[in-house]
Structure formats: structure tokens, C-alpha cells
Length: 333
Image (tube, rainbow, N blue to C red; front, top):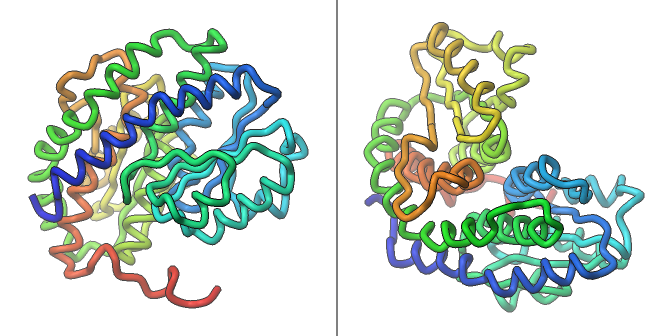
């Protein structure tokens, strides 16, 4: 498959699953310790990637958890953030400057700082109190975030089925290979159809809203220089629907959680008023070895594997490398 190294992919995902014991120890410390709240502090993709896990806590627990945009958080911090807080960071490279600034800020506030990265000697890995290392370039961080959240809530008596969930996560690396193979011809067809499309409208909800945000900004905009609109499916009918025309490319990320009716409503409208609707529906993808119980929680991981195929084929047909940048980490700002 285009731009896909199966051996490397399996190594990366398996390395995130292998962090289970370290993550459990961290969750046990937090549960038994002085900590009263948790902040996922991110920038760009790592902020977006944390949104499903903010939601995971907020729909199940009274324990305060927030996902925040780091640079804004430094300038306008939450008054509850301090020595009783856990600050969680993630960075593929371990060098993201905005995150480094936020780690320093969190340490000054006395928070426990935790970093997920794949670079042991990176600035972020050496700056945080606790570093949990995966294989280099391992992405996404969903396995780590979900394992931590589920274990902590299990200890609090607010999540049933932790052992069943981590058993499903053990099957995820091989299951995602199956997803990737199924998605490849779909991604290729999308790319060939949209080689010259310069605008895409994206929407999603629930566990997939953060991923919708991420794919719009961090892939289509940053990596392909394409214009996008991204809107939560619940907000679609409060203004953004006016942008839809017959030739508007609409991508709907449909998951398997309780917010599914929101995306179903958008799909029905979109198909009536546009001739170019692409639905990325996680329920269409088999997950060998994974039970049905937690498919809703696993939707971001599945969606990431699916649209990786879209991205690789878009880059090829548009002759625009996913590594090409004009400004990001190129010029001073």
C-alpha cells in the first residue's frame, strides 16, 4: 500500500499498548494521591486529540478534567490549576515549542507533569516529571489516553469493564491493519476524485469531533494547503449549512457513540443538497479480535487509520508531500 510500512506501523501501535503497566501505575498514583483535577494541555493536533478524552471523563465522572490550548492557558489559566493538578502533554517529536513553554508553566505552578512521546532524549521527555515512551513517531495517542482514563475511572468505580477494554486494545494493532487494507481503495478513489478540489467541509460529533477538528486543520490545511470548514454536527444547522452547494465536498465523520443521531441528521441533509458527500463511518470497518462493547470509544483510532489512506493518496495525486511546509517550523512567528 502507498506510503505504508506494516512492520513499522505494528511496532508503533504495539508500543502504545505495551505502556499499559506504566499507565496503570500512574492512574493508581493519581487516584490515591492529592491530585484533584487533570488537564490535557496541547497545541494543534495534540489539543484536538485530547478532546475525546476530556469528553470521556466529563460524561462519566465528577472528577474535573479539561483539554486546553496550551498557549492560551498560560495567558489565561484556570484558577483551579496548581499543585493539586496533573498536566498531561503529548508530542510525537518531543520538541514542540508551545508544549515546552506549557511544561515549564505547569512545573512553575507545582503540577505533576506527564509526557507521552516517542523520543527519549527530547526536550519534552527530559522536562516532565513522568515520561511514558512509545516507539519513535508513534501516533495517535488514543491508546495511552484511553487506557489512563479508563483505569482511573475504574479505580473510582465510574467505569465498568476495564479489563475487557484493555483486552480489546491488545487486539487493536492487528485490527488496524485490517482497517487500513479495507480503507485503501476508498482513500484512493476519494483522492482521484478530489485531486483538484480546493475546499472541503468537515463535520463530526462525540468521540469523533476532536478528530474532525484535527483532520481539517492538521492534515488538509497544514499538510495539503487546502481550505476547509470544520463544524460540530450539532452546530451544523446553526449557520454553517448555508455554505453547502451542489458541488461542495462534505466529509462526515460518523462514529458509534450516543451522538450518532447528530451526524445522521447532517448526512441526510448533505445528501439532499450536495452531490459530493463522503461518509467516513467507523461501523463500516471490521475490527478482528475487538468486541462490539467499546467500538464507540475506539472510533478515533479507527478513523485515523482510515483517513491515513485518504491523506497518502491525496499527497500523491496532488503531487504535494505531506511533509511540505511554507511556514510551520520554517519561519519565525
